Length: 404
View 1 (tube, helix red, strand yellow):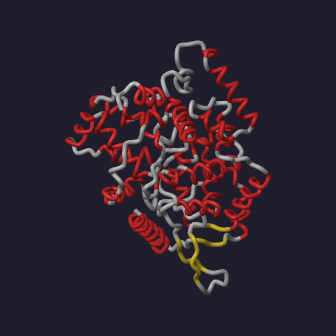
View 2: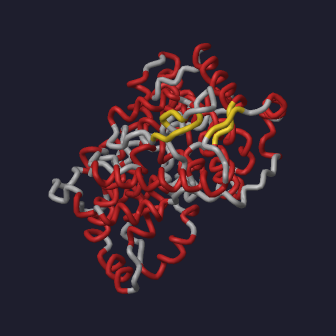
View 3: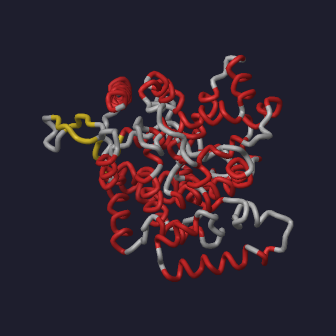
């Protein structure tokens, strides 16, 4: 697994360095004073900028990562016992109230939602992180979600957090990085073209650019099979090169990376708070979706479980796809790498992410795909538009109304 990850890292870094050489664009440079002033003035309006990004291309996309993952597919621990899903997700059973189900049912909301909201308000008032996590397993009310997620992630937005964000912002204004162009390009290609997220373009630039400079993110490499990329940049004296982690946070953005941030813009309108929640989400969950590891919440394990469950519960669909030359994993991989951001409607995505935080695992990410009524003839419609799916009823039916 580590060899596979190291090989992949080498390939990505080579691609980045080649881009720098071919385009004649340095990996990092100090901005002239006039450029710094201009960027500081338009910090909240970066979306109005139209830089020429035609020469820049994403270093990689999920489909490229899938190719590497398939090569090393045989390395994954296939002999692992099946995950006891019903026991693991017992709070989702049919007798418990669920946001994403009961709030949509044809019953008076007082029977569930109002009482549930009062419990949530109590959890927030007591600032109890463990209680917030447990509560989130049944879904977070829209008005409490931002505070509950902040509690679960221990993201407090204290003065020192705001100061840290401002220091990162100052770093962006001072230095121009090659990866900044990749960030601009990614936002333009994804979130800016999304009906839900295009209005958050400015926020996305701010958060992503600051994230690329944040060395605190390097902490996650201590429990990650990946290693931070290193490259050579011009020293301060200008006459010698020195080896550094590049970009400073150790994360080279790929096509679709900004979609990890976009849904959070619905919850937080203060950039420093939005930033700290995203960073915590990344170093707890998202990094595992684009690195090769044996973690149960890692993309390799998720892919194995996806194929196992598809074969076991939708065998006709599985073999129909195979007979028509379509690998099921090739279809679903891009969804899983992005934790379904940009594919599900935002309200359904946030309900799904509630449970990811509640169970501290990305494992729930794809269970709603295994509904017993997902027949072959409806497949094309489902694949073309996941935004019509209601996630929680499908997960609940799969877990507790299906023999698994």
